[in-house]
Length: 118
Image 1 (tube, rainbow, N blue to C red):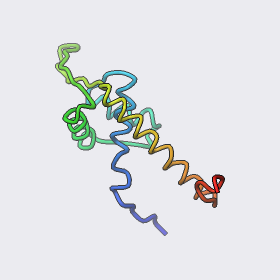
Image 2 (image 1 turned 90 degrees about the vertical axis):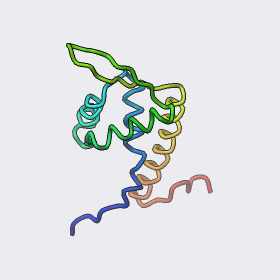
Image 3 (image 1 turned 45 degrees about the vertical axis):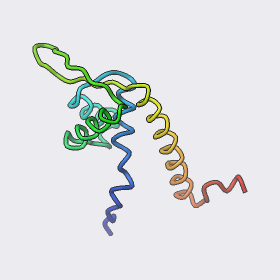
Image 4 (image 1 turned 90 degrees about the horizontal axis):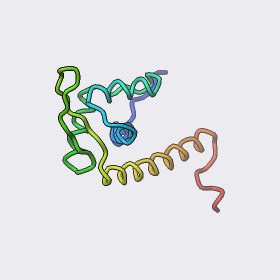
């Protein structure tokens, strides 16, 4: 039986989390981010330009990223980096994702998340 598609809103924060995580390590331009997501996830996760660029623009509009135009080897590119507000957003998203992943793992193993606290 083929797997059913999940609610796409369930994964909405993942591109934001991945992009902020990459940009916390080093400044990058858009297509470089697309390639890094694929290569650093062992090609398990792919996010095309149609996903990455809207997220970059939204994060910049929200003040989580800053951008600057830079010419490298004769090519002008827009490089993005994380602001202090973006670093805080990454911390929040990381905590949420860690809790979610732990709860899912617990359920996959047949337990109940948080049962040790009862």
